[in-house]
Length: 481
Ligand SMILES: *Cc1c(COP(=O)(O)O)cnc(C)c1O
Image (cartoon, rainbow, N blue to C red; front, side, top):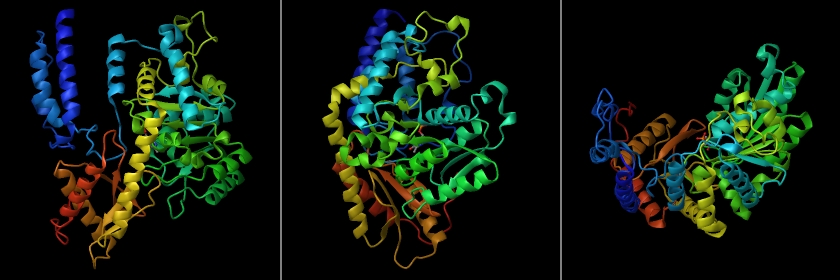
């Protein structure tokens, strides 16, 4: 392909992109395919001779598009969103075109310096402490891994990095039973072992119970175990519960334990002053993560990680071989030393485009709109005889279930709701996911997609209503694939 052809296809693609985003709500939001459907359509081998872009694009439309789940559809209420927006997509086009690998300051000074400034913007917008230093990670999972690695090193006086884990077999990490699975993954990768992840119980609103945390730490200390890290969650994945940060922070300070705050989804809500109560006590936290790629309209991936003591982070992860030594060493931020991979995408650009193009005020209005729609829906569900609200609506996640009159058996109710979810998602009109809260199967509806409006929520609720009347209440259980 030459430059002329590139130019002409780029124009054509941009038209397709604008059409797609204009019409995305008309696509079946969850891909309506069976396992293997796409795989079978792709040839066994790469072509020997190059093919035309026209042919490739036709296959994109024919094979790939039907196998996509449309995350940018306003009818997407599943998981937590991975939102994009027009300014973000435009920035990603430029990022792809520049194709820079931004591992060190020298490899693209603008990328490093814009990243530092964007993290400061986010810090200011969200009310995080001034002494935090920020870096963009690919995901919250990576940020949490980095936090646990740093805690491990700090508590071993940086000896595990040198000698291995052999001499340090009694590390303990704490979180709640509602904490995201990325914490367990990080504990496994860090060599601490999932048996040493202590999952503390929660209260009736799914928040970590600080009294149980304190008891767990004290009983570990009694037997010679070494508590190194507590992970507090602001906005759990199941029910967006907000762990009581201030009390947890008090316990961590008292016992000298690293406090990591996972606010992957809910952190974006900190741009609203009325939600700053969530971070009371955050000045005692050692690290904090939230994902602009979830609820701040910035394409995946863009995870904002903040640390109190950047030197402990650098000391944990920095390795400088001769071929990566530069003359500016120490004077600038070489962000490859702040995370796991060496290579880094230029992620700050899309954040800059988003924050400037929307402006804080519009971002706040959008988030408040989402939260309001969720609260209204929760109120509606509260009045429904055959539906039950299953968790408090702190932000914009509504957890509910169908509870037909006269049915009390929990197993049967789980089964009915599983069928209901399948019915709803098979329609292709909206996409919801589920979780279990206290063993009860609940449907999760997150109202946070970039372009979601009241009419989408109204339609979605109508669909839930109409789907419930066509499922078989007593039939055999739905068996997943
Ligand atoms: C989404 C989420 C994660 C994982 O985020 P990734 O960026 O996909 O790794 C972790 N914790 C919580 C609370 C989340 O909501």
